[in-house]
Length: 109
Image (cartoon, rainbow, N blue to C red; front, side, top):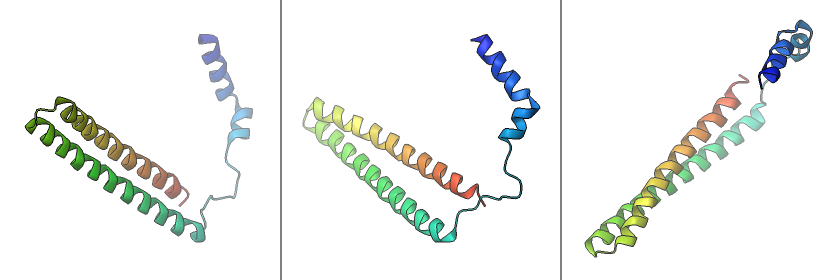
């Protein structure tokens, strides 16, 4: 493994490789406005619907926990608790993914 890292370090330090890997001079990457606005709308709708679904899943999970505890159905309460956790993970994943995609699109500006 150390030989592999040493080789990578030598290649990265070589000035000829740095010239080849550098950006193309005189070109600034930019996303066209005709594409940027529809893509942003699609991302906003997708994130909004996904987060609404996560909230609905969390609410249904809490309802399952309440019904399971009050009717002494342990399996229903356990499934409700799992639903709550998966809703939180889903909402976090949607938020992180939407932020990453928006950040990549805005890097060109």
